[in-house]
Amino acid sequence: MPAPRRIILDTDPGQDDAVAILLALASPEEIEVLGIVAVAGNVPLALTARNARIVCELAGRRDIPVFAGCDRPLVRPLVTAEHVHGKTGLDGPVLPEPTMPLAPGHGVDFIVETLRREPPGTVTLVPIGPLTNIAAAFRKAPDIVPRVQEIVLMGGAYFEVGNITPAAEFNIFVDPEAADIVFRSGVPLTVMPLDVTHKALTTPARIAAFRDLGSEVGRAVAAWTDFFERFDKAKYGGAGAPLHDPCTIAWLIRPGLFSGRHVNVVIETKGEFTAGMTVADWWRVSGRPANALFMGGIDAEGFYALLTERLARL
Ligand code: BDR
Ligand code: CA
Image: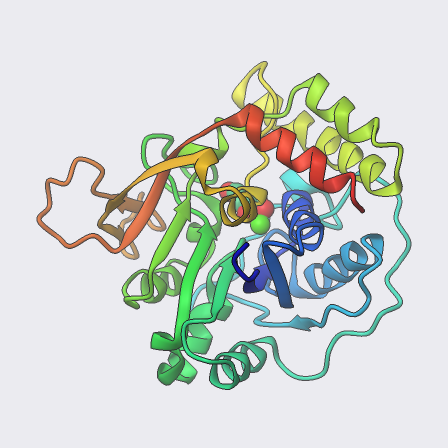
């Protein structure tokens, strides 16, 4: 068995972020979490930094360093998504306030220092919120860029277009300038867009499977999915809700669950109606070189089976 992938999770929890964190912590054979960096996104930074620690404590992992990163996008005012995730970002179950402290220092410095310390090509970045921290680290320390093994991110959309504007997905929309830096960085990118996550919807049976684990983790995950399902069902119609962010971790554990194409992806930063759009050259008509593995398909049954099996370990 290959050595586990060593990752930094960059996140704005968010119920689906929380499930991604739990999936990573439940999968030590495949994934070693070097640290978690919070970013402003679904809710302001103070809450995402709090929520990340709640999730670590729920998993019994007070040893994971959790850092606070950037509290706003590189150039734009922060846009949040309480309408989806609730006032705390993690609405649903009642969970205790965290007692573990934040790790000292700025999250961006943690990213820079980790990449400088570890051998080149051995650290993967997994951003599942706006790309502010990653872009800030690349701007501050360009020497780390070629040292990154890969970036596996949740963000963007092509055939599914937008969820926060008609053209843009939330994570890219919140900080398009940061996304632009990341997509131009030359680091190998794997992108989990809405095209994938909208094919991985919750169902009553899938939520029941979480609840039936009979553990605190199982009950929390069922309550989180119950909570945001209400909003998503109203928005998208009868079907369940997409569980976006855990797709990144599932890819690292079981890549065979997903399919995609190596294509060129550029970020629209200027459009009046299209800012934050991921312009993915799916049909390869632009002549621009491929810079991302842009995913399009998922075995949803396999994904939920993996998730349930791993959450059962916590
Ligand atoms: C993304 O936006 C957030 O609301 C979710 O946590 C996910 O990362 C989906 O568009
Ligand atoms: Ca997120």
